[in-house]
Image (cartoon, rainbow, N blue to C red; front, side, top):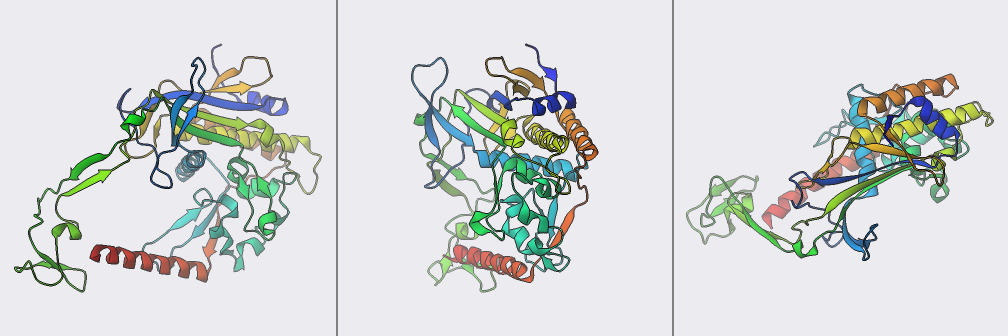
Length: 401
């Protein structure tokens, strides 16, 4: 079945029907070509996440390595939305904390709800102020205290990505009893057929173009500067490598792996989004508003994934993945039926988002396009400033050690 372009009308029909999800599964190869090494992320103990998975057509489980986790993929999608927002390519409700004028050693600038780790429930937002009041006590955020699956409207209007990528309001007034919203979009990248024999030590030398010799004695001054001295036995003498000059040999266990192929699996659950209700002025019976809000979140998910992954993925140093084919989404419409394929380009995705937002406005759901700007509290600024000072001190002590 050939793939068709996904339209707003088809998306709306999928929401209003019993369709379960949109999904996108595609194979990728290293940017350097098949057989090139890829470098997975390391976890506690500086190890790769290796596991065995079943693969259709193979009798034995296949050794796999995680190349990008669900959490990391969500962050990449949020960053893609942030870049599109900064480029005026999309309009999206967003909250930002403005640290300008905070007199920090390393200026933070503006931090948005697309960048903080816990989205609308993040402590950075909690510990900031709006019009002189703590954010959660301000008029702009009071409605959040009544948010639930049956009242998702406050989040839709302040931070809709929290409904898409998930949120637990554990820092709000209810603490651990705060409302939870499950992830509606889940994505991960896995390398199949990982060769564990490649998990050996990698050795090499970081070359200094000046070729500073380790035999030259160096003395550090109290102000952080340094000088060359004639007496190599003088107290406090160090080697050039200790002031970051000279060639440095290195050795690491994380030498990358080779894989047969990588696969990205992205699922956007319409079932999860259908659990959300969007009452307007307390009216929970407006099915049109519910469907319209769910359609916007579906389009937002498709937009985030397409913008982030359409042209491949640069996950980290030496882990560039190139897709074997274009992104094709499948709609899981009815059990027993073959999934229906749809194409969504970046331009299509942005258009879908704009069209579903217009539909939501018609149904009475507001979509805020002006940024809600907060100011960090004095204590939050103090925490950041002292943390930066400690980082500078720790770095200096590490060099002297």
